Length: 145
Ligand code: DQA
Image 1 (cartoon, rainbow, N blue to C red):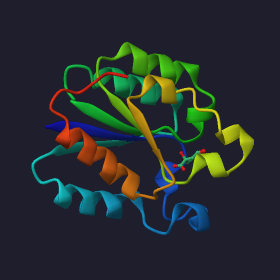
Image 2 (image 1 turned 120 degrees about the vertical axis):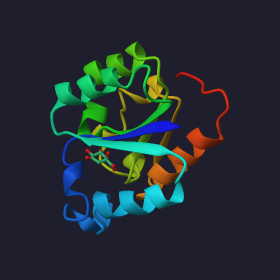
Image 3 (image 1 turned 90 degrees about the horizontal axis):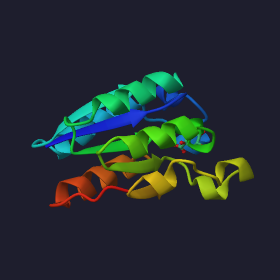
Image 4 (image 1 turned 135 degrees about the vertical axis):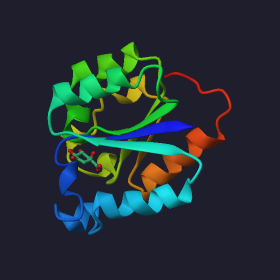
């Protein structure tokens, strides 16, 4: 099984950035542990701070990945282009946020991508990625959002 984890802007700074909100573990350290939890799954990781690059990566997942775990960072709350990309590709996407976006500023309460995704996980810390991966691995027929 081939999954992709895609992190958007500023998530390269996980572990360093606002640790009281996002924790003190780097994504690289977390990912190494995650891969050992899913030895049978090929997990490709992609991070970009550039909206168009994220869109290009999503397009490239067509026909290659069974699922995508996407933390679009602040583009969640702004990007119709990213929402359209999720609609355009025939690959199910699960939205993940490390923090509980509904418990923060009002501008984080809108997600342009949520309705295009099969589901969303928010506020469960880094474990949100693991829970999303577990959902994909347990899914025989994967629905498209
Ligand atoms: C985030 C939440 C977003 O509102 C924020 O812009 C981020 C990270 C999260 O993982 O909690 O960059 O997606």
